[in-house]
Length: 129
Image 1 (cartoon, rainbow, N blue to C red):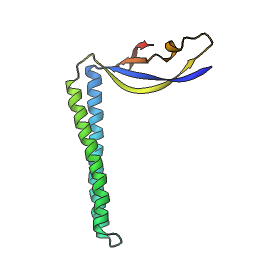
Image 2 (cartoon, one colour):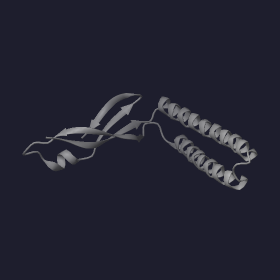
Image 3 (tube, rainbow, N blue to C red):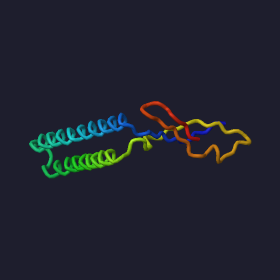
């Protein structure tokens, strides 16, 4: 019988991976800032229409803009943490699912131990089981 088990994907931090993460954060931040500008534009457009109350339109758009600004703050924090992060340290990148074979006589604790795949610059360097 096979079961599905969660496996962590960890990345060893290198200069190359730090720069890649920094660029990813920066691109995401710029996308959120553009969304805020677009929302402000749409808000002004809708406020000029008479079908909806100005206050209702403003409230809806301000909430969406606020959500994006919170995400921008989180990205800024991640960038600060990235600058502090030392080369060679391991960070958890994501979690994937793996199929694991279970047979009679298998040791359950061995099967359910935390497993991890360690990656350095896109290459698997170690598998911890």
